[in-house]
Amino acid sequence: MTRLACLALVMLLYAIQPERARLSGGEPSGNAPVDRRAGLADADQSAAPWVKVCDKTAFSPRDTSEDLVFNDRMWLSNGYYHGNVLSRDLWCSADGVDWTLVNAETPYDGYSEMVAYKGRMWAVKGSVWNSTDGVNWQKVAERTPFGSRGYGELVVHDGKMWQLGSGQDIWHSADGKEWTCALKAAPYGPRAASAVVVFNDKLWLMGGRVTNRNRPPEKGYEQYTTFNDVWSSADGVSWERVMEHAPWAPRMWFISKVYADRMWIIGGYDNVNHKNFGDVWYSDDGVQWHEFQSKTTFEPRHEPTCYVFKKSLWVVAGNTWPVRNDVWRLTLP
Image 1: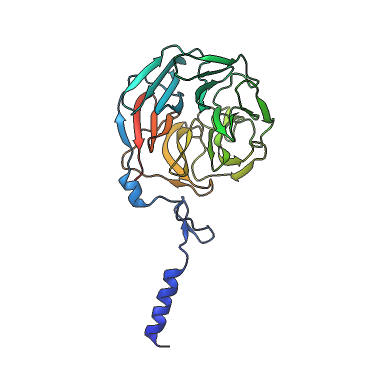
Image 2 (image 1 turned 45 degrees about the vertical axis):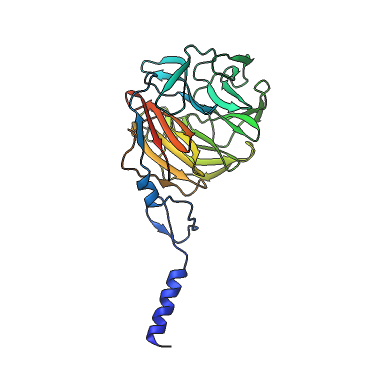
């Protein structure tokens, strides 16, 4: 074989060999499976920066507001202001700019977890309420078996409402009246302030904290230990730890949403170093994570209110020290 033919053969073999996957830490790994859907192209990221659509909304600055999308609008319920002041109001918007006050004094428990389910808005905490318009609310259950816990999540999975992320137990209900304990002691322990989402027909729980001092103690709230692990379950009973340590740092008070066929995590509080996060990560399997880069972005914050609405990912309000009432939008091409 001539030298020219040999060179052509080498070039052909090089061209057809599988591309080595690049992990989120930046180092190539020959063992990682190639997934061309895993990472957004650089062109996609540069063409889709975060855009501030509103600097100050009609509702007051706040964090820890609950979100839901219902009747073609984003809904924002309640919220925290400095000094532990609770806003009991309910707002909605069709564009993220103009917000309408729907209810100035909501009757349900403060900081109730919200979800759209069976054609109604639901508010669940120590009691259960629902509504079709946000103005008139009906009490469905006087008391829930899990009570008024903080920093849990309410999601819809397998045709039921699920409450998890505010303890070690997991509950579900098909009507809001009768609640069934699917699991008394989840293997991830008594978590709170985790990110919870439904993706690929599974429940996912990520990060959060437990009340137990780390060694050495974390610089923020010293009684807490925070995590960066990833768990999933198809039935809420059998849980798999998909990752013990994701490439994003341990955190609490952060948000997860499903957008563009991927799980996303947004912001949060870095209890290890007592600061806020402003990073955004995404994954299509919970194992390979990629940090989303944008020339413009929101200030680091914890407990923002996030939506997936009209083909965009939205970040609203949150605590940057001080709390905010701005609105940001990301729209991938």
